[in-house]
Length: 182
Image 1 (cartoon, rainbow, N blue to C red):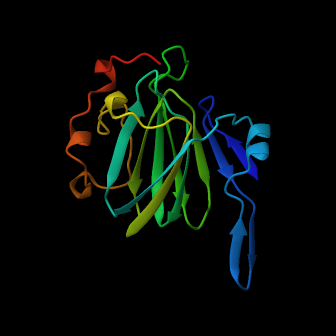
Image 2 (image 1 turned 60 degrees about the horizontal axis):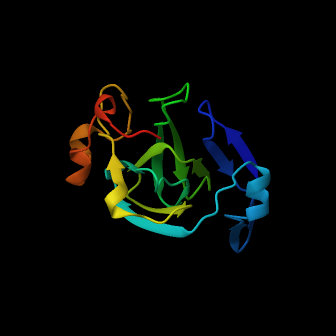
Image 3 (image 1 turned 60 degrees about the vertical axis):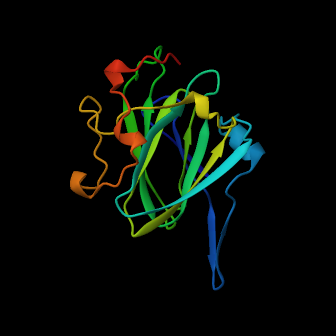
């Protein structure tokens, strides 16, 4: 597997080795030893999956301390733009974001450590998105950032008038108003 470091410390793009033949393909999507060697020491305890149509934007979500989560995410059907925003106050990249295209074709994964907000936009007709999390979900610790925050200025690659958002995601605070310390 190929591990690509991003400009934001801790965020990693993983390209698994994919073996193609007449039957299709095979790839290893997780191997604890190999991921540890790559610096991913999270012990995953919960897997999630979502299915969404074109224009859906989910995020920017996080779990408040002490229930923060690291995530290993991928798109197994379709294509998404996946985004992580650094919320670690002691980080030189606090408030900065990084995006990567994840798709069934490129098989990429994105490792997002604790202390980040996370979201994605669906760029294909449909997308199936998977998450491995290193902490269980706690509804009382649910938090988020407004995905259209002008300070972040994220290009979701979906026109604003075509975005499909949950009611909750339309009401998250701006980064400047966030009162969570990671």
